[in-house]
Structure formats: structure tokens, C-alpha cells
Length: 367
Image (spheres, rainbow, N blue to C red):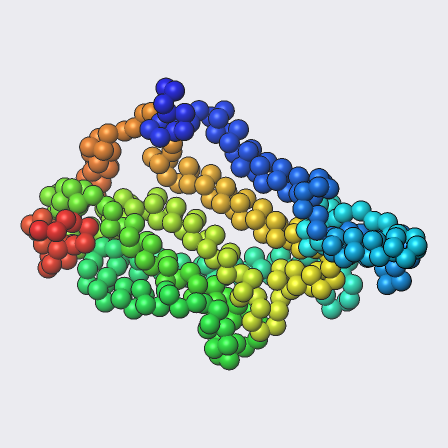
């Protein structure tokens, strides 16, 4: 790799550098957090009283604003009283990293304060179930509609204007309606996830399907493909790997609606745990629960990425600087599809007729 391409503009980075950058992406935020937490002269806006001295309303362990502490200290000295003693601390809502790391284990092992309160693992089970069903329902509806909108202009013109309008409506705005229609249990929470992801899913997948090379469509039509068989034998196989990548990204989108969704009806899941720990001022547990969501999401995405290498081996990353020519890639696809396309006996439509024989397909270039 040349000196001018150390940032990876034209070539893939070496594996060792990628690994180092991966570590730094997590270590740099952790380093900044540690500096703010453990360095007394950086921020630390509060003073924790260890000895109240002559200040009557100070109590041991009390956190006081540093300006107020300095003012009371000066007043006590001026009056000949014993000055208070304390040390600078950060607010309770910013615990140091070691306390949060400890909370990763204690939050699971510590029983709830009340019998009616769930354990942390029970909260996560309920939240994962909500995400799973919300995303599955959204995908069952959104993926086929997105493929149709990206393939046929009739479906695009019929569905996308309303979807474009609806996607700007915030999903939480439908919370009251979901509770009124579906009750107060888990159904309205799943519905919020569906509303928050379905409309984006249709548009994203439709845009991906439109990127199919028109030359590939024309070549398949030359071999006799048309109508539904062109959709199932050419369009879907050509885009399925990219649609799978879109689904991975949209799954992360679904997680962002989780906390809001679990507020409606009876508060449950990880949202209930986080809210409860905030009331108890257990902010180390709050941070731990938030980070656990990130860990679960990252582990899920890495698992799906690994699964993609098995399902779509032709999409595996090639060595740095080596790219398969586009023409060769298209030829390989057509070679694989030819046996299933040749048996068609119906006459092939003209290249300008589109997939259904009437009107140009959005996959083809404009005349």
C-alpha cells in the first residue's frame, strides 16, 4: 500500500491495521470516560463532604456544588468555625468505568427489591421478544412490497407516495391508538416497532432493488425470461445479498424504538429496569443495562454478518486491491441462470417492454 493511501481511499486496509482500528474505536471513548472520571482537575463539578465542620446543613457523603462549597468554607473561616472538608467528584449520573463494569455482573446476580419486580435477565427476555416479533412482522410485509416497488413502476407509483408521507410520522405518536386497539400488554409495543421499521424498510429495499444492472435484465430477457419468472430467477437472486445487508441495518433501527415502545401500556422489559434503577439512583446499573443492549445488538449483527458469508459466498471480501471485473461477474450470474431460463418457450419481449411486457421496468434505464 502506497504512502498516499494509508487512509484506505482506493484499497482495503491490511488485516492488522483493521484490527488495531477496531480496538481503538472502543478504547478511545473508554479512555475519554476514564480521564473525566479519574482525573480530579478535569470537570468534577461537585464536592463530596467528608467532614461538615462548622457548616450546620452539610452532612457526610453529601454532594455540593463546588462554588457553594467554596463559599461555605470561606464563611466558616471568617466566623472562626471549623471549615468543611471534601473532595471533588462527578455527579451520580456519571459513574466511573469500574463501577459500571462491576454492575455487569451484580445487576444479574442481585435480586429485585420487591417481589413484583423482574430480574434483569427477565427484562431482557421480554425486550428481545418484542424486537423479534416486531421485526419479523415488519419484514414479512415490507420485504415483498419493497421488492415489488423496486421492480415494477406500477407498484412504486401506487405505494411509495403514501409510504413517503407516512414515514415522516413519528411511531411513538401512535402509542395511544395502539394501546386503545391492542390493549396494555406486549401487542402495542410490537406494533410501535412495526410502524417504526416497516415504511423505512419498504423504501430502502426498493432502492436496493432498483440498482440491478439493466444489462443483466436485458440479457435474461434475451434468454427468454419474462414476468414473474424474471422476478424470481433474476431480480431476487441479484439483490438478495444486498437486501440481507439492508435487513441487518434495519434491525438496528428497530432497536432504537425499543425504549419508547416499552413505555406504552404497562411499562416492561429493559425500559422498566432502567427506569427503576434511575429512581433508586443506581446509575451504574443504568449504564450497564444500556451497554448490554449495545452488546446484544453488536453480537447479533456480527452473527448475521458471519451467516452472510455462508449464505452468499460470492459476496465475500476479496483481497486488498483485487476486484472482479463487472462484466465477468455478470457473465457468471447469467451462466448460472441460463439452465433455468432457456426452457421458456414463450417469445422473449423486446428489451424496452419491461418485466410484464407493458411499460418499462424501473430496473431499466429511461428511454
